Image (tube, rainbow, N blue to C red; front, side, top):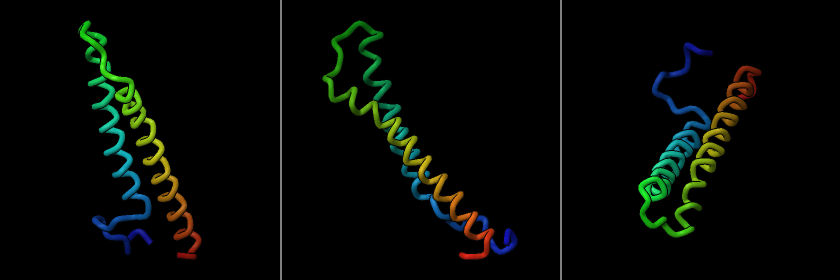
Length: 82
């Protein structure tokens, strides 16, 4: 089966993994922006910025779902039921 797969073809779950990485990156930036005033001694950001920091976990879960979808697709192909 491996010889039939193109190296640049998108497998199942790749879109979720990419979307999860983007959401995780946005959450990372929001976390850095939120924590910076606390370390610098300036006034902290509003509470909703702490909520945006939770995007790190959401992105991790989205990417994990993509990994599991990719695993399931690979198992279906290995069984021959594609």
